[in-house]
Length: 167
Image 1 (spheres, rainbow, N blue to C red):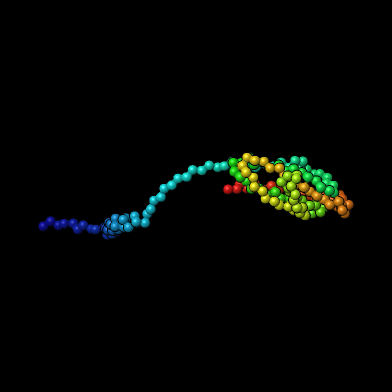
Image 2: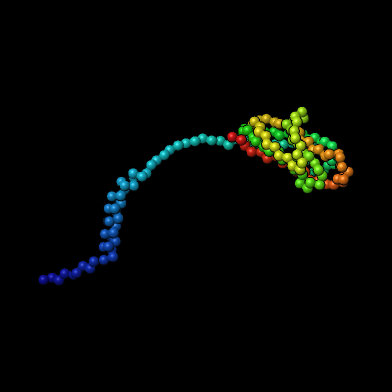
């Protein structure tokens, strides 16, 4: 009789093949199970960015202007232009940073309108439609009574315009 060679089985490779078959079989069984929890949605939207362009002009005042202020009322026009495609809300803030001189501030929508004077600082919010312009009057008042006590003093006044888009 002829002698036959014994075939040696590669045990790690056999285990890997069995595990591969079991993995494929379990994927096949569970593929329908996960499909129940999947959903689809579609949608679309169009939008564009609106132009935002707000400018201001404070007449004779500027960012680096030094001017002499005498006791009594002083008025300056503030022009705000909204060249945006949207309505804009803006806040005008006037404050006396150093408070060396007892100044009162007031912002009015025009020269004829009345307002209330506020010591040291003033803040008022306005709303402006698109493509429009508004002119306001900034009134700075220094009471002449006892004004000679403050002659020669220096003060720093901040005027801030903050604009935001309104829906």
